[in-house]
Length: 108
View 1 (tube, rainbow, N blue to C red):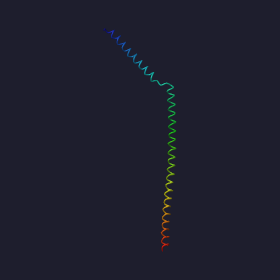
View 2 (view 1 turned 60 degrees about the vertical axis):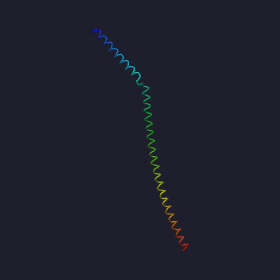
View 3 (view 1 turned 180 degrees about the vertical axis):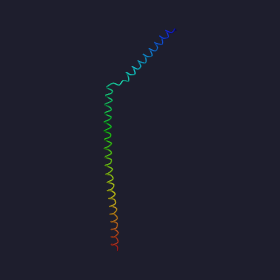
């Protein structure tokens, strides 16, 4: 093989490699291309996600407000229960004191 044949074979090999690379790039680009409809669908999905996050945040805020309200009512109910139990305890002590006084005066 002389010099000119070697240059021609090398040129053909490089051209075939270039053609295969270009074809592979075109094929890959064709399968991974994002179309306008895909972009609009992604935009719609992003908008729906944003709305869902806003709805979730509003629900969490309302839940926290309701939880605070219920905690306040529970604390109030516990305070009222404690006061009622204290009053009942005092009434029982008074009743026991009166019972003892009646027994003392009745037997004495």
